[in-house]
Length: 374
Image 1 (spheres, rainbow, N blue to C red):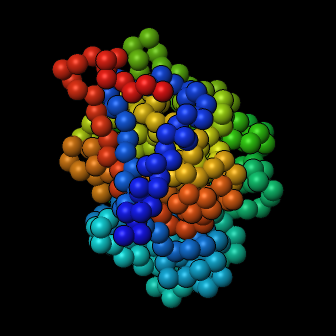
Image 2: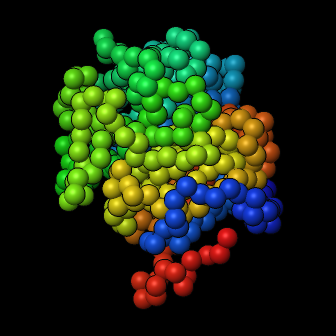
C-alpha cells in the first residue's frame, strides 16, 4: 500500500516537473515514444551505499559495486568500506543481495576498505573488471585504474598503469552493457569492450561531454590497446584513434553530463543511454542505433521521481538479464545523492530498483502524428 500511495503521489506531480524542464539536447526519438516509471514497484535497500553499477555474470547472477557503505544489510557505518562488491540473486520481483567483497558480513574481506570508487563494472569471459577512481586527489583531479577479479569478486588486482589525471585526459566511467558475460554485441561491435567517460574537467557536469573508448576483449589489461572514437566516415563507419586528444564526444548536453549508463536492447536493436544533467531529478533518457549515436530523446526530466537538482545523479542502469524479450519491459537500478535526492521518493544514498516500460511508436503511423506534446 505504501508503494501504491507513492506511485499516485508521483504521478500527480509529474506534469509540474515536465513543464519546468529545460530543452533536451537532442530531438525526440522516432522509435520510442515514451518511458514509464512504475513507482508502485519502487524498492530500496543498502541504506548508506551508493553507485551500484551492475554486470551479468556467466553463472547467470548479477553482480554490482557500491561505495561508502556497508552494502546489503549494512548502513553508512555498519560494515562500511570505500568500495565493495555484491551478488544479486533471483528475479527483480524476488531478489536477494549478498555482499561478496567487503561490507557487512561479507563472503570475503574488502579489497578496497578505505579508498576507491567504481562507477563501471563489466564481466568479460568470466573475469570481472571495474573502473576505479583511486581517490588520490580532489575530485575530479584523480587517477583512475582498471581492476579485475578472476574469482567472482573474491579478490581484486589493479593494473600497473593508470588513466592518469591530466588536463583533457579520459576518465573511464561506465562500461557499455551487453548480455551475459559480455555477449550479444551486434556483429560489427563484437570482439571489443566499450567504456564511456568524460575528459578531465573542473566544470560541474563533466564538461558537458561524454567520450567512448574501445579495447579488444582479450587485451583489456593492455593500455596501448585502447582506442577512442573520433568520427564517422562518409559511409557511416566509426573511425578510432589511439590518441585521446583526437577523440570527439559521442554525447553532449549543455545542461551538464553525469554518466548514468548505456545498454544494448536486443529486442529493439537500440542503445539506451541515461545521463543526469547533474542533479538527482535531472535525468535524461536517450536512444540511438549505435553506441556513438546519433542520439534522440525519449524523456528529459527536471524533477524525476519528484526529486530536485541539489546533489548528484550517479548511475541509472538497466540490466539486460531483467529485460523482456521484446525489450519494452525493463528494470532500473539507480543511485542518487544529496539534498535533492531526499525529496520525493527519497532515494538518497542507497540501492534503488524500479520497473519501467517503453512505449514504441505505432509503425503504421508517422512518428510526428504520435509524438507527445511538451
